[in-house]
Image (cartoon, rainbow, N blue to C red):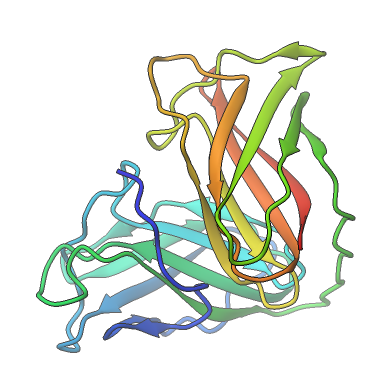
Length: 245
């Protein structure tokens, strides 16, 4: 099931749930684990989570200049401590996001979807990368990704993604997280989070080339989109900048 999370993810607490961690820095240039927990309204670590797109927890890391995107699925210990294994991080200011649905408790928390985040510093000489200009297409691993749609801030709009390779439509997209492609967006300036929800249903082992998404981006400006799709057992990530009016 693909849920609609509320909020922009820029807070570490919402509805009595809080993202907690002792990790305020992570090392540069080498793999590192970020450890965290989610506490509930009672102040205790939550240990029961609903499965959303095949996972109980989706975890994202993004640098302040919207580079270095990572989307991983952490593991949880019996005491509710999660460990997210991240690839090498470049020096700079980062924000890490936990997306989850509690499957315990009462009231508004149970069955509700949350995206909470915390800031993390990676020490070192941080060189800022300018955000690429808005575009309707990009390339990744030999694939060409084209985005069609003109989303307006605060309004639900359809967005279509088409994938080709060497000028030919790609029709061998494999299911990934219960969809043929996973689309995440971050807002320039504050790194606000948005998950663009797929509306193309998975009907078999091969999909494409056209995929539909429900886009509801809350604020205007530039958003950096990260599209993840899988072919031949390999995960590809394509990124482009989308201007939202």
